[in-house]
Amino acid sequence: MPEHHAVLFQGRVLADTAIDVPLLRSKTELEFLSVPVLSIAIVRELIASAYVKPFEKPTKTIVLEVGQIAPEAQQALLKVLEEPPLTTRFILVLPSFDSLLATLRSRLYQPIDERMSVSVEYPLFQEFLRRPFAERMAQIADIAKTKETSDFDLLCDGLRSWAVEAPVNSLTTRIHEWLLVLPKRGSSKKMLWEDIALSLPTVR
Image (cartoon, rainbow, N blue to C red; front, side, top):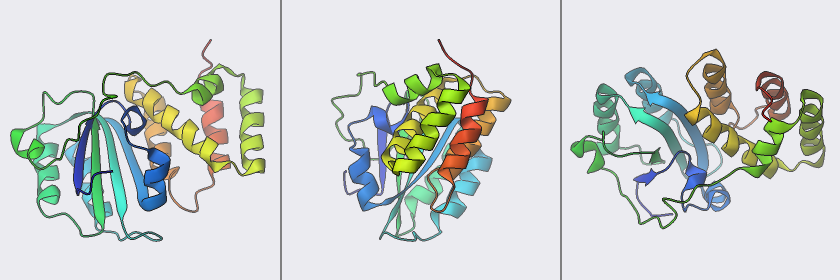
């Protein structure tokens, strides 16, 4: 991970990039924000969160996985990137850089990513989507029982990827709310995933 306070990657979600996500999690507190359109209202909430110090690690990293950024939101984001909090870093993941303002892009470090054009699949989440509701609930219970929290993280990566491409509706709005809560310390991942399991459509 480059030692820079704001990094730019091309892709849909962080797991599509060359970043070693488990290694990154071991070094910094990760906070994910995954939305189709980053609005100025969301950026204002993000800025407030950026100034909250991390709990357990020296730094926290806010990962923005977005389809596009509204122009006024880019201006607001530029301000926090120009004078970032000392303990907060940012990673921006975008499918395209065409709409990025030059002033904003100049504040972002873009490392060479040889995996940029490689499509990454999420087999654990894809299998989860194919399961009937009862089997999903059993899978969640098994993960919680064995305390394999990395499996919850893998499911979360797949859910973010799915939500970024899904049309905006009441379900995707709820998904983005879940994605804000899932990485937080103290959240009941089992209960949240049970809610998700009963809400997501079954894919054949």
